[in-house]
Figure 1 (cartoon, rainbow, N blue to C red):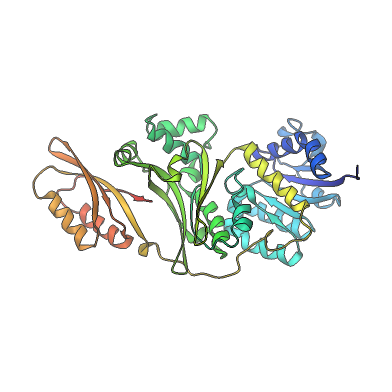
Figure 2 (cartoon, rainbow, N blue to C red):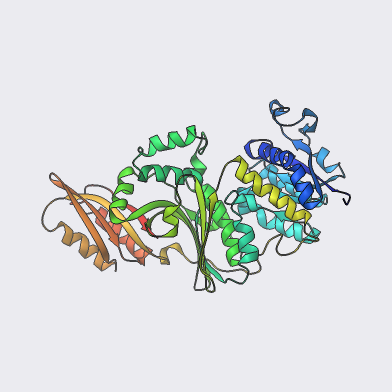
Length: 425
């Protein structure tokens, strides 16, 4: 047998993902060696919380000094799993300048400060791999950068946050209201103690910035992504949508419109027959459309330590198996496209509100919608004594006009609740 090629890794962070990366490398060491001839080991673990030392790894591997990694000539790859943007940026920049390739799962780092790091990596001939930053074990970045290079992608839809998908699935199944299902998600480990980034849409927005950058080959940052969360989605919204034949999902939508880019995250009614409607629980999915491929969807477990660790180790092996850095390893943003304004996008909408149950009310509402070129596709009215609850789905319309119409409807004396609105995919 040929002599093994020793590859040593510096691991930054030993939380849920970091500890699982270490565990996967140890457990799969012999299989990796047998299949590839690579003797893959973790040489150092940079971790401030030394109470974790010795739990899953020998205590001598742990340090709180990143310089120890840079001073070890045997370390060729640095894996950044500490999260955040400030220290992570500092460490990744130092690793690149120190002649190391980098693997990261840090979506916020890439979505906010990735451009500078990719530029530096290209200058230095180093690689940055980031498959684990979106979709956990789903190899969506590799597929988009390599398999879809000639697909001429124009649309990317993503269910890219397991926490919100778990909650919305539970609401659809009638397993409780929003507060109850969020609490259950936290108990199961799908949601953090502070779930703001997940339920508020920020986590999904960072991931969609990365996916849009790859799909359209133009730099998209968090500042370019408009996002909403699911905090205002109620059990009634989900159940009424079900009556219309829809499933509510938190959708990341990146679209190329007339040569300009629009990227957003928002709750959406998805038709029950659509591929994305079947993605339940904490699973993720990325749905791609292009001029040459029609539609493709990738799905799988999108969060958690083991799936994400699998993607990290895959990135490590891809670095080892690549002779030199190039466009497939780093940034593919080769053009500068303008942004398409949110208000000019065309969307269909579901809206729900309470009105006085008397003659002439529907005529007033329909007149306002008509004045703003909003056409009603379907409607359900449910009487509640002197009031009625009105559920409306519109045909696709310019969003600016729809929201102007909603403001006028909300101001009518016969309307007794603020209209709740959700887009329709």
